[in-house]
Amino acid sequence: MCNACLIENVRKSAMSRRGFFARSAAAGVAAVAAGAMAAKPALAQSTGKVVDLTWTLTPEFPTFDGMPGIEFAPDKDYAADGYKIWKVSFFEHSGTHIDAPAHFAEGTNTVDMLPPESLMCPLCVIDLKAKAAEDPNAMVEPEDIEAWVSANGEIPEGACVAMNSGWGAKMGDPSFRNDGAGNFAFPGFAKAATDMLLEMGVASIGVDTLSLDPGNSADFAVHYSWLPAGRYGIENLANLDAVPAAGATLFVGAPKHGGGTGGPARVMAVV
Image (cartoon, rainbow, N blue to C red; front, side):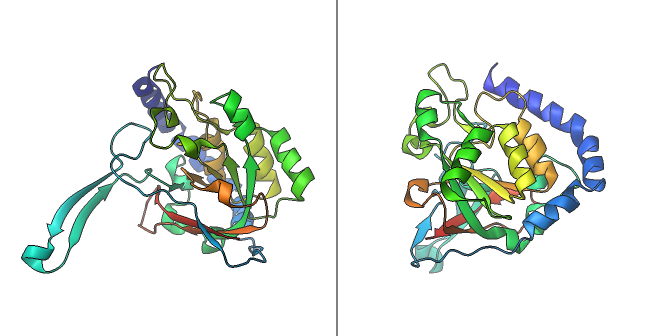
């Protein structure tokens, strides 16, 4: 299926499901999520080292729909005005950015409503690089979570669980977004895995790719289940090789524009 067709099909599907998600939220799904989102963060016993997990957003940065995610227009200039100001226009889901629940579920939290406690949390990083090297649409599966727990201990309630697929090494190359035939191709989470993380009380998930779902997803199953449950996601994380599997604390500088479905964020980890 062509990328444009996929995007249109997903748009229609989203509209048809709005009522369902609104009823689900009213039935208490979001209330359950609130406990995880407000969980007291377990701060790392850190050395004070700060790792920037954020890509610089430019008009050339790859986006899901292929359009420039940000545009700059001069408003004031040093020569004429004595100082510099750009007028900046951007799409919410560009660069390293937040997916708020409202991105895929009407009636749920917009980005300005995310509990601040959920934006400072333990970071757990699942290494998916070996699987992704063999399959560009590899997924974090329940067994990957089980292996992480076996090696590192329990995932703290309220944590962010991030996938490190090694995809950051592809930044600047067309293969970050597409395969040789022009189809979306990048790793993501499997719904079975995020369902497990919901039960564990995880507050957010993150990926070093364009989408929480793998590139070959035809239904955005993770978006349609994780976000309506009151959780948030982070896409296009950078530098995950520079943080440990466990022990770092994540700081998410989420935007706070009223009614937003997400937006570019400055994401950092303290190790």
